[in-house]
Length: 59
Length: 430
Picture (tube, chains in turn orange, yellow):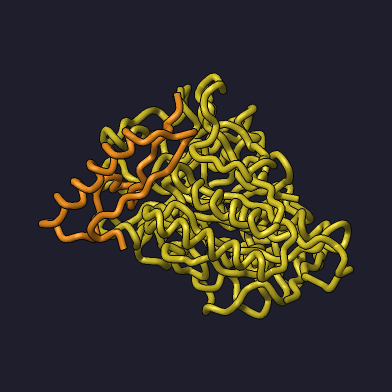
């Protein structure tokens, strides 16, 4: 089995969040990851592919 | 930078009334050495034991092993027992084949986690002796008891101060005024410019007390990749504190005798030119940090005008990512690479060997698997403690150190990964 669709996280201990973002905005970060994951699931891929997420605090 | 190493081989050690070298037999004044170590008031007790290669013995609670070195003009182990100045030039005296091994039961204030000072076990005989860097050494073992009110960083510093202090004392007392058996010079002299230039990208890990590497006495935790002279490493600039990762650490004696550095020196001017060392740190938690490390380390390899690079990495888990991203960037810049690594592979050796992979890593040297279960036999003598502590994630389980001990994997075997090839491709005592 191969993990063909990979959504890149920010830090090893924070795969679907961002500790640099204020706590009251955490829900926005997590929602962005969840929505991106759903988009990615519906995206055809040729092989293992890394997807990035544009989320609050990403840059 | 020219380093003259005067070597005094040690093939036997015994307790005596004064510390001296009689031929290749090291006599150790036990009381004098213990008193010296106890001048640090963090150390409440210091027992001195001698353990020889092949002995029916096991050393436990190992914190580190250092090769005794002494510099006539001062400057031994800078940042520890000497002022900070660049190591790697001048004259160093070394007791080749001897090691000061320091043992202590460090506090377990947390259960599990990256900074747990895990059990470090060293087998002195049998097949597993080949997997630890002190089994070929005449060990002068310091068994310390530390004050129980010390914070972790103080405990960490106390054990490494003790070993460096003892190592310098032994080397000075044994070699001062004596003629070395051999003298060798380490210097990156100019060689035929048409030879291919090979750099060594040396990735260590450093994450605070019990999980650190010290560079001139300071933790390398926030290290950005930097160029160091190989002589600095041979001359005691790096001290290993990765007590949290027994299998996957680089004991200080291995830094001092790194076989890849020694091999590149051996071949310098004969088939290749040793371009230098890029010292780098892995196991950052942020993805961006990993990319920064890879960009910086590969850039420095280019500045060294490397045609090829050897990459090694210390520690485990995601630390492999910095090393392989660096390798990938080197290859993209036209630098041919060799990756030296230990593997997982599962108990039977048929599982995934590496946690991460890049297609550019097409020349890989394996130093062996951590995942094979192992039984440590009963031994006649244990040094360091009567018990070992395993399973920190459940608060610690004690077992008799004498054995037999079954380990589901080899994490607790001190220095076992040999990730710079110190057992399989070179000898730390050569």
